[in-house]
Image 1 (cartoon, helix red, strand yellow):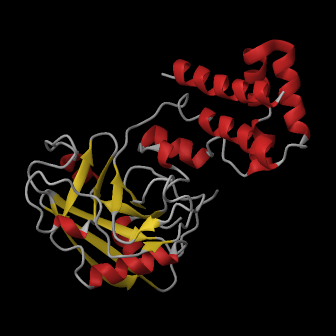
Image 2: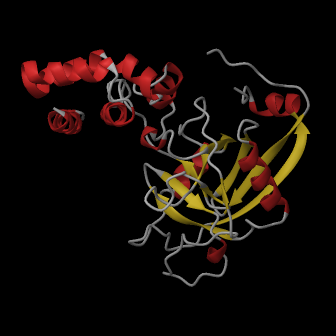
Image 3: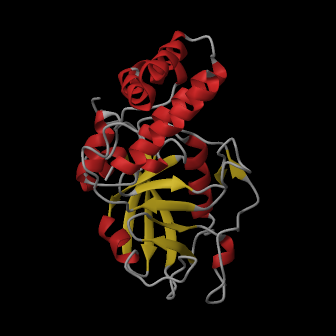
Length: 290
């Protein structure tokens, strides 16, 4: 029975792959840090989130030390993101593959459901799950999302997450009645009946496993208007947001790159932080606090 359920979960994911083409409150008390990211192609302004304190503190510390100054955006991918922060990139010869440098430490993941990879999201790079199952962040490397605008159909239900929730429930809670419902549906009608039943149980599966299956309304709105890259959500720590200069991201992604996605012409960064009242930040840049 478990074998059938495994096969059905895989079939569910394959079917989708082949067929798929709160209220915000302003937190204005006290001061905050405005981040300025100067590049060879323009300037971006960003804020860092209080809800990811380890990442915020580390980024401010490195910026104040001048760590980022003259480093490269060493990985640029159109429709995806721009990545930098590798200390080895400062004096790197043309064509050298970059991306392995760090300050010698990592930062524990700080996932916050309300922060996701919409355009302009400032997110921490990290090593892959195979060597980093805790999803700890790089001590210095980060990326800024460009992504693209998605359709409502594309943002409705994350079928990969649905498949993952089924596998997780079977592994961690084999006696859960939901497993029996899914098994019965497969035995009664095969893959298609199983797929329909799984989608009907999406909310219950999400509640039982903690895996987000249906994309929240705020994410749907952002991804269908501003754009971004939803496959990264809940996998990388989002710790800030570009609030001015999104067009600079678009400009950087137009540069020519080598097979390792390193720009042929260096794109350098210079990062500084300035402490100022939150009310002043909002006055200059609009509603930027969730």
